[in-house]
Length: 587
Image 1 (cartoon, rainbow, N blue to C red):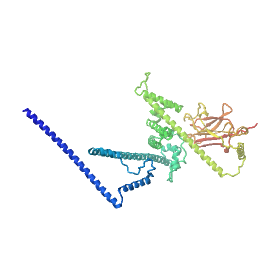
Image 2: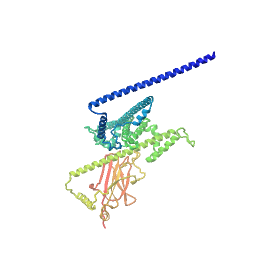
Image 3: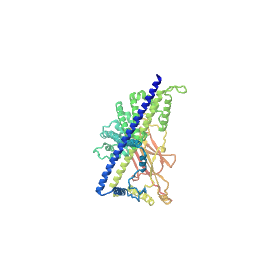
Image 4: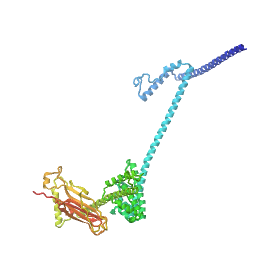
C-alpha cells in the first residue's frame, strides 16, 4: 500500500510544479503584452503628433530643419538679450550654449535598460523627487515658523522696553504727585510732620535731571507748589530733634507717610536704573538714605514713647548705652557694630561664652539696635548739614544779585566822603598793581576750612549747663587764597610763573538754629595764639551752644564793604566774611 501512495504523491508534485510554471509564464507573457501595448500606443501618439507638426510646417512652407534652426536663433537672441552671452563670448566657453541641452549618455544608458527595470528606475526616481519636494516643503514651513517666532520675540522685546518706560513714567508720576501734595501743604501753612521733614529735600534734594524734566514739560500748570516752595526758608532744626516733640498718634501717622515716601522713592529709583541699564545702590542715593535713616529713628521714637517716655524702662536702658557712642566717629561706630554683630551671631545658640561667663543676649541686641539708630541719626545730621550749606549758598547768591542790581541802579553817581574816595583809590591801586595780561581774579581759590583748623578750647563750664546740654554749633567755613602782585612779585614773576599763594581772607558761617534767647546776637572775639604770626577767632552765642574757635593768620582786616567785608546774623546763621589788607612792598 505504501508504494502506490509514494508514486501518487510524486505525480501530484510534478503536476503542481507544472501548473506554477504555466501560471508564471502566463503572467510574464501578460505583463509583456501590456508593455508592448503601451509602447505601441505611445509610438502611435508620437506618430500622430509628428504628422500634425508636418502639416503645420507644410502650411507655413517650412521644413523641420528650418524650424529647429529658427528656434535655436530665437533662444540665442533671448540669452543674448537677457545675459549678454553669445556662442563666442560667454564665461563657460561653450559654443553650443543656445542649443537645448540633451543628456545623451543618460539616454544611451536608459536605452540599454530593459523596459521593466527602466519603469522601476523611473518609479524610484519619482519617489525620490517626491521625498525631496516634501522635505523642501517641511524645511520651508520650519523656516517660516522660525521667522514668525523671531518676529514675535522681537515684538515682545519692544513691548517689554515700552513697558519699562511706562513703568518708569508711572513711578515718577506717583512720586511727583507725593512731592506736590507735600509742597502744597507747606505753601498753604497746613503742613504735616512728614512735610516738615521733607521740606529741605524738596528744596535742595531734586537732581539736575529732575529739574530739567520739570522744565521740559510742554503743559505747565498755572500754579506749581514746588516753584512756590522756593520762596520759603529751609528748616534749621535737625530731623531727629524734631521728632522729640511729636506725640504717639503723630508719630504713627508720620511712620505711614515716611514708608510711603520710601516706597515711591525706591520704586522710582529702581525703574530709572532699569531704564538706564545701571543698577544704582541705596548708598549712591542720598534721598533713599535719608528716608531709610528717618524710618529707623521714627521706629525708635515710637518705641520710646510707648515704653513711658523719659521715665520709662526703655529710656533707662538706652541712656547708659548711648554713653558708649558719645565722641565716636562714624568709622569707629561701624567697626563697633560689626564686632557686636559677630559677638551676637557667635552666641545665637548659647548664652554662655568660651570662658564660661554668661552672655546677655537681650542686652547686646539692644546695644546693636541703638547703635544702628545712632548711626542713622548721624546720617540724618550729615544730610541736614549739606542742605543747610546749599541754603547758605542760595542766600549768598541772592545777596550778590541784589547788590549787583543795586550797583547797576546807582551806576554813574559820584561817591562822596573820605571813605568812598579811599575805597575807590584802593581799588584803582589794586588794579594798577596787576601785571599786563592778568585778570583781577587770576589764581584766586576758595577752599574749605575744616576740623584741622578748629582750636580745642578744652573742657569749659557754663552757667546754664545744668539747665541745657551744651553742644557745638555746625559750621561751613572757607579760606580764600590768591597772589599778591606787589612790585617785587611783578619784577620776579609773571603769568606763566606766578608767585607763591598767600591767604587773602576767610568766610565763616556758623549755624545757631536753636538759640534759647532769639534776641541775643552771637559775637566774635580775637585772642592771642601761641605765635604772633597767628591769632584765634572765637565765636560765642549763648545757650545751648558752646564756644567755638579757629586759628587764622594774624593780619590787618580790610573792613571795606566793597572789598567783601560782611558780618550778619540772619535766619539762625552768623556770617563773617573779610579779606586782608594788601601787602605793600618797600625797599
